[in-house]
Image 1 (tube, rainbow, N blue to C red):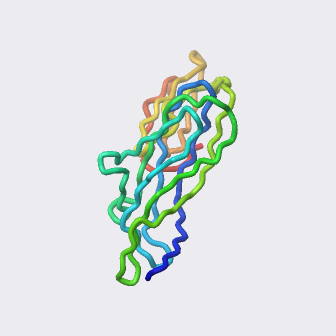
Image 2 (image 1 turned 60 degrees about the horizontal axis):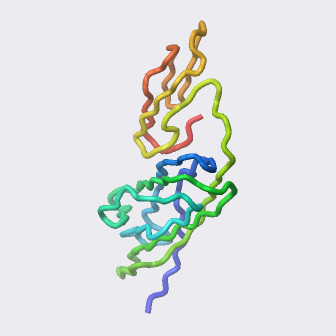
Length: 182
C-alpha cells in the first residue's frame, strides 16, 4: 500500500471582480507544478469549480476532459461566464484529480482541493480616462484601449508590457506572459 501526501502549489491569476446583475466572461490562466516533494505530476484533471450562483465555467481543454499534462505544458485556462446574481465575497473551491509518479510507482486520481477568492460587487461606473478590453484572458492576450478623453493636446500611454504610445488612440497591445500589468 502506498500512501501519498501531496502539497501542491498552484499559481493562479486571480479572478477579476464581477458585478451583480452584469454579464461576466473572463479567462483565468493557471500554472501547474511539475513536481512536488519528489513526486512527478503526470496528469491534472479539473473536475469541478464551485462558483457563485449564475456563473459557469469551461476549460480550454474540454475536448480532452479538462485533463492537462504539466510535463508538456504547465499552463491551462478556464473561462468563467454568466451573470452573477448576488454580490459578496465568495470562497471558490476548485477540485482536481492528480496522477503522480514517485519512486517508480504511479498513483492515479489523487484528489486535491484548493480555494480561491472571488468578489462580486454591486455594479459601479468604470474608469473615466480609458477602457481596456478585454482586461483579462489567456496569453498571448490582445488588449484594445479606448480613450475616453479625445481632443487633448498630449497623450502618454504606458501599457506595462514595455510598450508606450503618444497617440490619441493607441494600437492594440499584446501581453505575452501571464501576470498583472499596472
